[in-house]
Image (cartoon, rainbow, N blue to C red):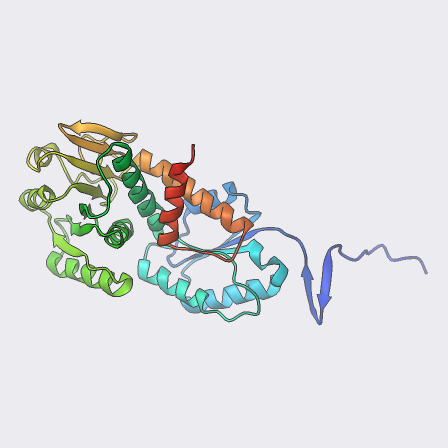
Length: 324
């Protein structure tokens, strides 16, 4: 009988009835807690060199537990480090719940790298804080710690920025400026309680939809971070005239008009008004992109890390110490 033309697969080992191939193809599973995965994160993952990016939407903690277990059991201990998980979506609470479920999985091998960045909030907030720290020091304006800071915007970026600032020892206030928000005072109290319960930080919340309220709030701040909804101007020149000088203004809104009037996208401590210095959204965005790419590349190569907002800030600081 002639030899069969069917050859066994190379680089494979058999254990019982399970066949594990020793291919080192890198796979990133994206778990989105919403109904649409981020095209930004997908592009970044491929640019970081992942061989495959697999998307799941409307993922619950129970879904994530099953999907991670299946992925890791299928690849075996030797290849688990080439299998990474990215938790996205727009809802911080849902994303954090998925993270807890994945962290608590019991498997007979190390869980691979887990990245959590809902709505880009963790990498954006970390880039914003790290860049501001760096700008203050290089401009000889002191350290960010213990500064009085106001964060305008209560979305995921604003909330995580407030958490990072509070953990640095800053006196942080988070403000909602949406004049159309129903029950604004109740809403901002809910934000306060959420941040205290989830992140163990005591952050003051303010509802400031009108000119006078914004002006009164911003007069007391040294550093002002604008993380409001895209395309909405929160601070105009009439407010800048009334809040005093010696302030640093940081805006992450890249959709015109700017969140702070007078800030240009690529500003990097440019004087936007007498004795007021601005950092623009493209300057922050460049660092955010470098940071996300660095995280994805490291996750692809090393495995066994959880990339949360704390690690994001540490890595953003390290990037600023390196040349571009």
